[in-house]
Length: 264
Ligand code: ADP
Image 1 (cartoon, rainbow, N blue to C red):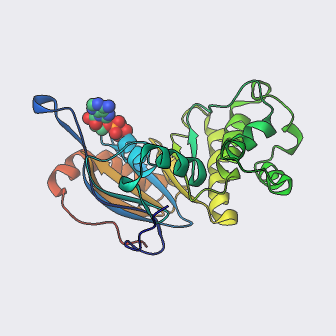
Image 2: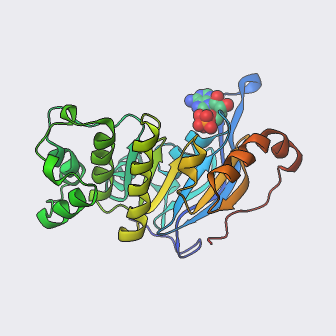
Image 3: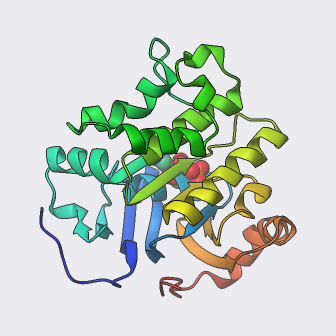
């Protein structure tokens, strides 16, 4: 696969002037309107913004699930626009993990088989020791033979996290991963994601509506009208909530071409 030397070297994701336009004429919507950002390896980034601000589109473009209208996306040193659909699917399978709000587990498979499924789909033989370790990390050693339906919501999300981590992907993308969980369980799951950054050097990018969830990240990016309008380093939940409250008015005044892209 073609690797390109451009872009910050320690950036695992680099978006450069990414635009994504839906529709045409009167119905034209710029879901992403010139996003330039670098995300450093081994960091946890939260993406926040009002509904319709472009969070899902950002996640889909960064993860190679969707293609920008213009601009460039590099993931783990690979320029995604150069890839054909099949190559893109392969890259996602091998280098990207996903954790969704709905856990998306296979109901007829055991916890362990769910966790090793992406490895087997990628044609890799699961290393038993490594699988044991990831299962232990998420606290499911005693549950690995159970079916997902026999587990609580929090446990099911831990299975999904273990499944995302098992392939040792370059990036794990979370789309509202705590959206279906109660507060206490959500906190546990966020703690687990945080730990994955610490023990595995995992890079995580998470879209969330929840300031408490964002407070677990190293950096929170704020989107408004398809642009990154602010970034906070290790904010508290209160700081995130405060910024969200003012985002609408603030964004209109100060949308600018500033880059929050310096990998920091
Ligand atoms: P968010 O995740 O922050 O709610 P989205 O990325 O889903 O925002 O959407 C950004 C904008 O792009 C919205 O105005 C939305 O209506 C529009 N949009 C998203 N997906 C599509 C699509 N497939 N077709 C048309 N418009 C879309």
